[in-house]
Image (tube, rainbow, N blue to C red):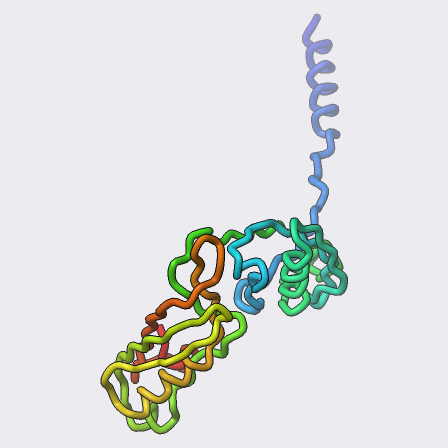
Length: 217
């Protein structure tokens, strides 16, 4: 007569199994992220780039529920690297953190590495402080396009001199000359010191350009 005992044991087992509550994972909020489509570029501090100095900057910010950096602090190998990282964060848009489907305040942090080659034999345009070239409206409307090459001498201070343009439509020649002549440059270096050197630049004035690219690829 052991069957009832076995049945009782089975019933007890089923009772215990049926009363075990399933484990519930604790919800973790999704962290804030830099919006990849709406952020400003990180500027390499001119004083460091001019002499090809590299370094790092770690920035930590409080990000509001609206996706805005409200308070940032940084630690860096050079003070201006930290300022560059903070400026980028303050002028950018973030995707805020979410919890239970609701945007919340959170923290965001990132480490940036600044690296510049110690051997720069030709000048480079300082794009962070030089406005992008503008497609002349008259040329754009008329469908005038061309590839224009400009050659300039860049002095030790990063200013352009004696610029000349290749053949092409006059309006695009003048626009190309204006862009390269008015641009700011990082001068070439020799033995660690800035020197005058030649710069060669090209602009593709493309009549089929997307509206957001202003004719440049």
